[in-house]
Length: 149
Image (cartoon, rainbow, N blue to C red):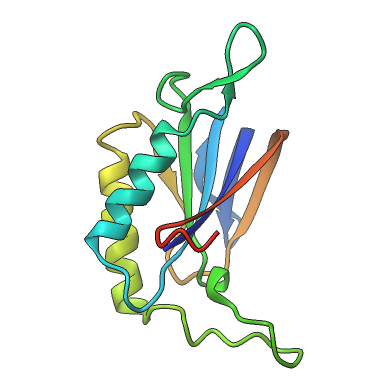
């Protein structure tokens, strides 16, 4: 399981002209799921994300987590995080999980995140979405449950 985190001052997801998810300050989580992910990957990434100290304290140091700042999460499924573009010019998505499996793990991720973060918004699974955000810092972090990077 992979995630791209972006610290934001605000963010939203729109589907067919309608906002389906929106947050103020917090994190946008672009979430990619591969075919052999399981509950352990969900638990690892949620725990890592909600405890990651990437928000500034009163001294301007990145010492606070999204939970400590009472920030929000906007979680958006993104199978393209498993795109492999090492060969040719068209990425292969063969490492992305099948939709039914990915949707269940995505829902599990959101449910677990809601145990720690008061406001968790989402996109719409398997839909064309427009994600709009204001990256704060900018701060962007890559995470992988297998610690590949």
